Length: 320
Image 1 (cartoon, rainbow, N blue to C red):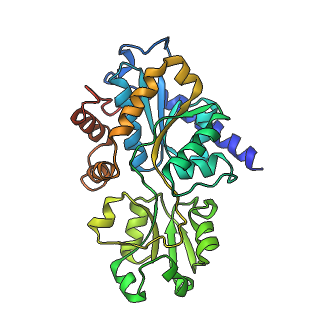
Image 2: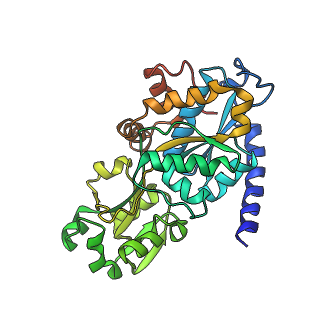
Image 3: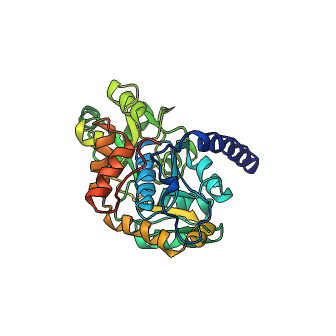
């Protein structure tokens, strides 16, 4: 049953990719740029998940590659990991920005668990991806993991400092997060297994996005899953509850691409991605997220400006 659903979702994405490929590449996209080694007429399609940081990372990867003469296009906001990762394995997209811990849990079907060690988790991910025709680049120092968050008022009312503290009151509280949260180990299942938490209700919202933040601010939910680099945490004086039992793993940003694509374009392709990873810290990523989510700037423009400042790009993909 799960496999059939995965095939159906992938087929739907195939149609979406086909349609998007006809409309997303503009004259500003580097489709006519100097091509990478042995690239022929191929174009590298960079896909993203359906939340702002992933879209931003997709443009960072694409612009960094375009600066080296590789033909690229971006297909942003394609969907959740359950949709995008099978599409990557099927060749509907060739490159995706991932997060090591969550990607490992997904691709290994839960058989290999990530840890807080960035190196160990990245190594396990590379081995798991290899059996599926995928390769990983260098993980960035930048991490973005799940954060269990409450308002300052809720934290004071219930004397909450750690996730363990929620055990006293979870049955009275409503939890909000992405729709896939009930199936994700590092979300509701992990909170039940590791912390024994059973909330009064779960409200499906979005992946650490505006719906979740708005529901938390309005009091429609009491506890939320956001991302650790979310600029709203500091801007809105939210309280991140300490993960005192170590549920959340290392979540370093890492490029994942098809082995066939890496082979076709040569070692310079992965080298360009690795150079970008070497420059990307958690602080830098959080600052870029703030420009997108708080200042309302377009991800392509934010990506291009930062890459130019790092001397990793000459021109960007515009709004393609």
